[in-house]
Structure formats: structure tokens, C-alpha cells
Image (tube, helix red, strand yellow):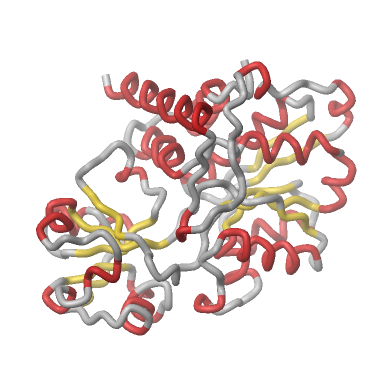
Length: 326
């Protein structure tokens, strides 16, 4: 029963995070967010009856990871005593931000790279790979829009170069720089727009000095299929992909020059709502994301995308395993 195995795997991951105080993040950067190894009773979110007077509507964009994150924040805030509603299928980031400004939602989870690149048109080569630097820029720009940006998650969902582990072992590949001298014999797969993106083909050629035998444009849903079928040697993947959970089949090459923009999650909220909600709002948001390391979010995504579990149930299990709720 894979469902039982993945739940056990999640419990082991969270136990390790709690015991060791480890918080991972993308782009080789430290978000500064760590878990202290507190006991489950100390982690428990306390319900404050006064919060029941405040209605919080949590939104999300329309893909698996966002659904899970939306549920984690919503269920955590509900545990803190807030009257919580959900709109977890908003569409793009521009729609979600407009929903905050129009008062349709109180807040939603966004990514630092997306906030800067899509919402504020910052060129990809000017978006920091360091999570805290990217957060500081996004926070300042969003504040001008009347939106509060909360500190980033430990994990980052960023572009990455993936390959079969057998290929990585054969060619001694650990970092992207290790592709120098072998990439010219390799086929790289990526989305069609990868050709023009600095965090994709353009950046690999310009910043890493790589040349490839061929670039093959593929649908995003086929980014691992092309590796499995041998149609590509390398593929542009996302660091938090479900396929990477508990799997030794694939290897993600380290962005050793730290040139790929940070994609850590930041919860965005209307300043008006945040002020009304008070300190429990901030405390809850920062608490429930504290254990979201890269292996944990990969596992949560896997349970939804591969095991076909419901995001609400997966989020609830995460919150319980972390000791945030009973």
C-alpha cells in the first residue's frame, strides 16, 4: 500500500526536521527560517476565541502545490480560531493579486520569483537566487500595493536541470558546471519558452557557457517522460516536483553559480486584513510553513499528483504530523 508508505515517509521527514532544526531552501541560499526541534505540544496552534470575529478568505492559484499550500494556511488559521473561507482555484498570479486588492480574498501563497518577474516585470537575470534578497525586493514592491508579504518558506520551487541518475553517475554530474565538456553531446528538453528565458536555455548558454547537441521543446507534463524514454539527456524540471519524492531515479544538478531566481513561497495578504487579524495571523502563517523543506513538499505533491489524495487531507496530515493541530 503506497499510501501508507508515503505517510510513513512524511512522518520520518518531519521527525527529522523537528529533531535537527533543518530548513532547506532553493538556490543554495538560507531563508533564515528554521525549526527549533520543539515538542509537538509547543508547536500546537492555540485557538483564540477573539479571532472568531475576523473572517479570512484564503486563496490559491490553480495547480497542485498551490492547492496544498492554500489548505495548509487555511487549516492553520482555522485552528487559530479565525472564521476561514477558501477560494483555492483563482488562476494566475495577476488574478490572485487583483482578488486581494478587490477584497475577494484576504491572501494567497505566491513565489518570490513570480512576484518579482510577473507582477513587477523584473527581468529574470535581476531576480536574486538568494531567498532573503528576493524576499526583501518583493516585500518592498508589494508594500507599495497595500499588500503584506510574509517571510519565505524553507523550500523553493525553482527551475532546475534534471537528468536520470544513471546519466549523472556515468558523466560524473553533480553541479550544472559539470556539464562543461559533455553538454555538446546531450539533448536538453524544456518548455517552448525556455529558448528565451534566462533561467532556462539562455542562462545555461550565457551564464554557464554550455552548448547542447539539441534543444527539444516539450509540454510541461512530459518533462520526465522524455528522460524515461531516452528522448532527452537533460530536462528542465521544478525542484519541488512530485516525481522527485523518495526517488533515486532522477538527479537534480545544483545551480552552483546561484543564477536561477529564488522561488520560495511568500504568503501575501491585504494589509487591511492583516492589521485587523492581529498577531495570531502572522504567527500562524510563519508557524505552519516552518517544516516545509524541499523533501517534505515533494512528498506532499507526490501524494496528490501520484497517489491521487485530496489536497485538504494531505495538508491536514502534514499539520498533524508537525504537531500544529490535533
